[in-house]
Length: 127
Image (cartoon, rainbow, N blue to C red; front, side, top):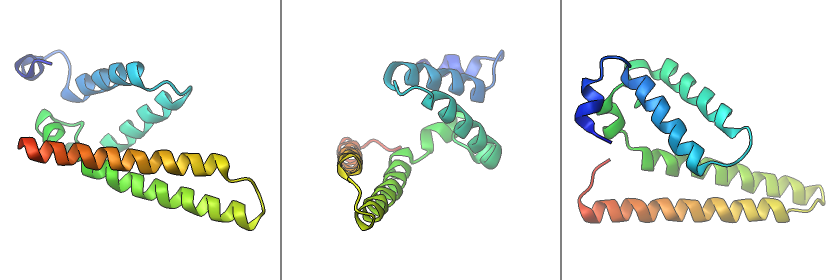
């Protein structure tokens, strides 16, 4: 992406440019049916909720937002929720293998993001 081209573009707002770019990225990497619509709605809600402070609102915000750390926080929530789901299913005597697999995937994703942060810090990158 060309930073100067993004900043000079007077035909679209940064938020529109950002949305288009994110949709392209997700078209390439996110293959679960229906999730793209939910992700788009979540971004719209975030932009409305946070306004000018949103990372979608400006190039500066997008580049400064600590998204890796936010992702870790969200994954911790997901790990806690899935752990609770396994607890509930065990109490009810239900099969937990699918939930256990999901919990392992979430934990692996958490470790991968921690490693990404570590690599970024070693390279002197800042989010």
